[in-house]
Image 1 (cartoon, rainbow, N blue to C red):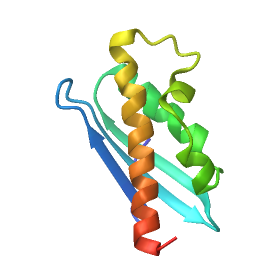
Image 2: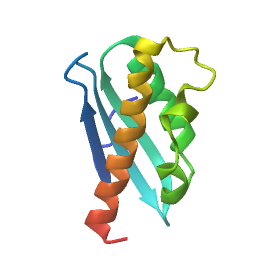
Image 3: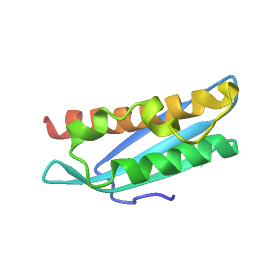
Image 4: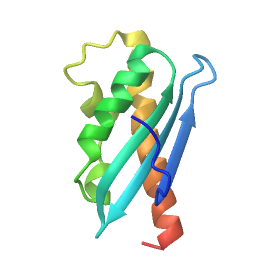
Length: 107
């Protein structure tokens, strides 16, 4: 959890219906995610899914991390159906951060 001050890329998403907001920060080295941090404002499900996502993404290549789905994130968490949108937000935030990196560095 937290912020990377000199992040290579940032992805932010939010859900107007529930008020959850996630901001993912990436530090990339040789096409691999060297560090990833998240700032999450929302319910406990949003915090848990975004935190788990950081663990899943760290050390992966950008292509591998881009393929992480909300199902991958929520697997084993036993989230109620009403909270599955939190895992969707987490996966979307990561993809936005990767897209931001690719746009900035033209990769």
